[in-house]
Length: 359
Image 1 (tube, one colour):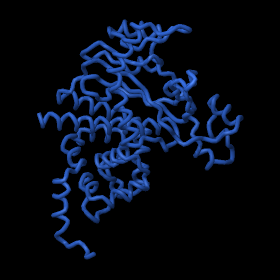
Image 2 (cartoon, helix red, strand yellow):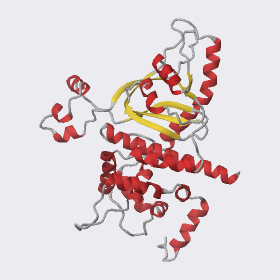
Image 3 (cartoon, rainbow, N blue to C red):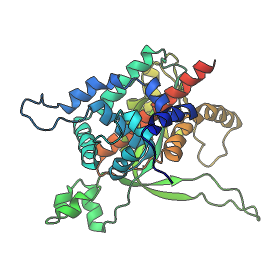
Image 4 (cartoon, rainbow, N blue to C red):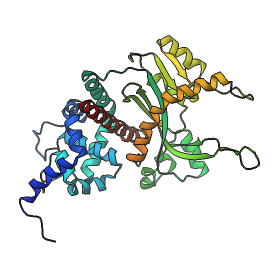
């Protein structure tokens, strides 16, 4: 195979555009410059008066993190992919053969955002852009949560008890700093209950399948009209869903209804929603020891038809983006999952803008 000629690359990039480069579309739809101010405020870069190599542009580095979230790749893999893919180079604004961030630079940038807690500020910036573009939160709110797996920790019973009461890693493994640095003491085990299985050949009801999961939980509130994630929170996997409802539901949605599954129904939450002026569309629980009344079953079915929109969000993140937490600690998990939520919102905006263009 003959090597590519000098003038072949300028011809190749228009062909990428003609065949539909999704990153080019993303760059046209999302104004990444709107994130410059919160990024610079969080990073606190020096003015360069003391010399040294200037840092990479924070907006470009943020776009690298979005690519990492869209594809759930490690920083080492990201360093190679930025070099390897022409569409990624064009999206980031690098010339072919120019210096690009290495794995350590990417990791350091993410760490600085994590320590500054900047993900919430980036969410606020994009929320303001959505409202300015006419994507107001309306139609009601859908609240749900999904489990995000993390590498399983193999601990002894004594180590588990120490972690449960809040002992730091360096106290659990004294004299072993390398081991302590690799132990995630914030993630928790929980059990995910699958759907009820149909009866067997003899008519006996088979038990449901319980799947143990170790990791974190992504809590989101989605507006029904547009499907954007308007609020999000990250906790350990053992956190009860109903405790997160006041943190997710807002009073600015133009419709008052709030949809959620039975995990969010409690007397305290029902009273809180009423005080906020929201209408509860939370699933009703089955009466203990009795079959579900027919009118409650019909009501739950109609609520499920609306609440299914949240499953599309989680399916996109887990199936297409392969969301998985490889970091250690709750703060880093919040950054990882928060970037995935932002990446989903970007893709959702591309969907709506394309549909509006066709219409």
